[in-house]
Figure (spheres, rainbow, N blue to C red):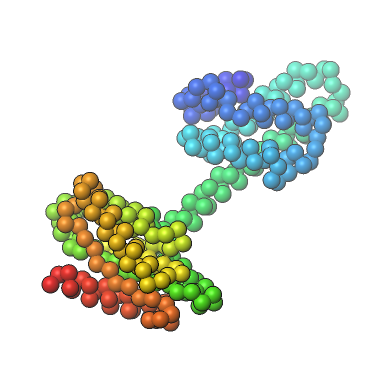
Length: 290
């Protein structure tokens, strides 16, 4: 509890104020128990990379961050733990020899430093993962953006070529989406795009992949296909769109057009697939507008 009290003093850990007593303690009792074991019987493997204690320190950092703790606060919490434990040792220094005090200080510092390192690593792992995700995904819909989708498609075509299975590329374009923005406004248009993207992705199988190519244009590739794979996908899409319209989550009259090309029967590479799917998409759009 001393660590919590120190954290609450002078607002050193502002996020502690929002938590109940158990939340304020977090994993500190466990860390204190492990520190005591390390001070009495040091074991290098206890603090090694991949150890249970290292994993718990990372989990503690992730949980604290999820509760709104800033990285500085997470590190400060462990520095306060070191201060409290060192105060405990100092009060008993008279019963220890100088050598013992220095040994305890070194072990305490080494252990706290390792715990802090694990917390920092957990934060950077999470931040790096988020940045990598943002670099590949469309911010509005969460689908792969154009370049990332094309890279994945190129890799999938090579796998299909190597293992001799079929693949379909489907381009989808929303019909009259400009009218939605003009009549309902861009915020409602963005919300409709998000809902459509979720329905689009949700209509695919786990093995398939979706992307947003830009504006109101989307794409998906479907792997290991037969002649019914794409029609079944488009039927699922149409059914889901009808449900969303009925629920009032998409505007009345919302519709889409699609064009498809298959590998290897109709095209031998990504460029050929894209050209053919794009051509068929705009044939479909002209037919629906007629």
